[in-house]
Length: 243
Image (cartoon, rainbow, N blue to C red; front, side):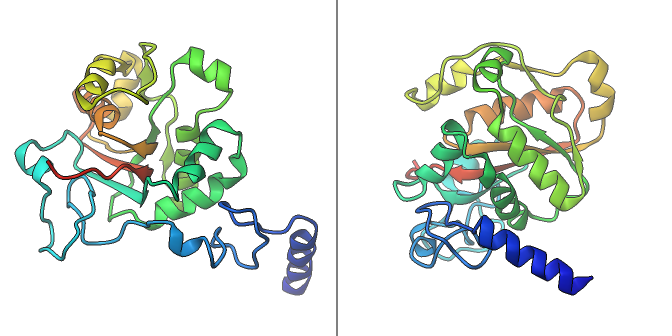
């Protein structure tokens, strides 16, 4: 049986070879990147802010906070990201987000699940799209990532728990202050679903952490609706100077 499975795997690899998610080069292993592209992706590793996950440029004690979190702790307990959003890594997200490169979802989910801290049996909740944007795009990239993480970890996937009730303009060219204002009161939890949240730990999942405005508003909404605590997980993260 194992021999047949191995032969089948070889046949699949021959017909549909594994390719690097960045350059498209055929690769032999399932890590997702070729040997040339792998070192070009700025994966985030310790040391980083214990709360928001912003990487530090120097060694620092465990559970240290960055300057931003030291001044004003966010509503989420922790946020973790796989890699920094840079010129080298941005196409990994943009192709997935806008070019229907959905085949990368299992790989990205695997990367995201691998970096998680010790969280006890959370509900995996994606940052939602407004229904008009979901209708136009046909899929929510955050939901695909959340589903993969939930499946890998054996956790509950809850795609409809959080709702985006306000259609907001794209955050792309907004300042930090404008982003917070843009998503103010944009999210809600239906009264009928609040019982599912009571006392639960939530793993909030999105594709990119930019200023943290969207994650903050989502976390505030979930906590107000009865969640015990919220942790955030994203594929990429914009790293700016610690002002």
